[in-house]
Structures are given as structure tokens and as C-alpha cells.
Length: 124
Image (cartoon, rainbow, N blue to C red; front, side):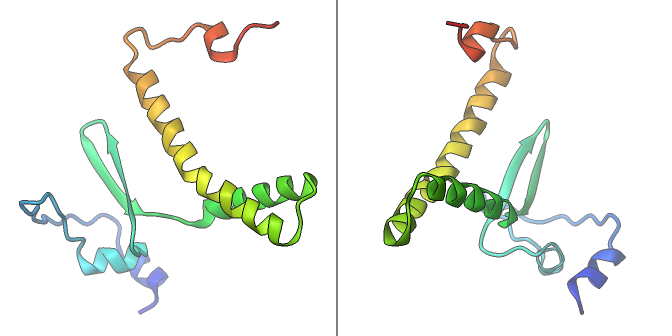
């Protein structure tokens, strides 16, 4: 059965699943197939809920295009372009993780605010 035809049949469905002693979950096969999971899942803590969804690779294409465009404008080409692209591509995920960690830290800030000059720097 085609993925889209399965998905259109599901509005909301609830299923109780077990958690192993190692805190592992098994995604029911039907959900796995319908949602298009592969080898990775994104896990999001949201208020008092846990959201688990497939990792979508499509956003990386935009980063790749931006990285390549920037490197080409800097004059890289051939093998050197390929090596720089690999280097920059490896740095994207850690940078996004750092950004998310910083965002979480900001959310935990007692006042919930950061002075504007600390956020953007001074006008000097």
C-alpha cells in the first residue's frame, strides 16, 4: 500500500507501547511506515510531552546550496572545493545543536531577558 494512502486513513490513533529497562521504545511498524522513519528519529521535549518524529533530510539541501554558493564565491573549485564543502558541512549539525542549547539556556534564564547590547553588541 502506498504511504500517502495509508496516512490519509489515520486521523488520530493511540497505542500504548512498552519502555524497556534501558529506556528504549519500539515504534509500531504501522507508525514507522506511515511516517517514513529510517535510521534516526528526532526527540523533542515539549512541556509535559515527548514528540518523536522522523528526521527530515530536506533542510540539509538548503544548507548545502548555501555552503556551496559561499565557497564558490570565495574562489574554491575542484578538489579544494570538495574538501572545504565537507569541512563546512560537518560543522552545520554541531552549530545547530549549540544554537538549540543556547536557546534552552535563554529559556531557563530567571528573568527571561538578555540586555539588548549583550544580545547584539554595542554600536561601536
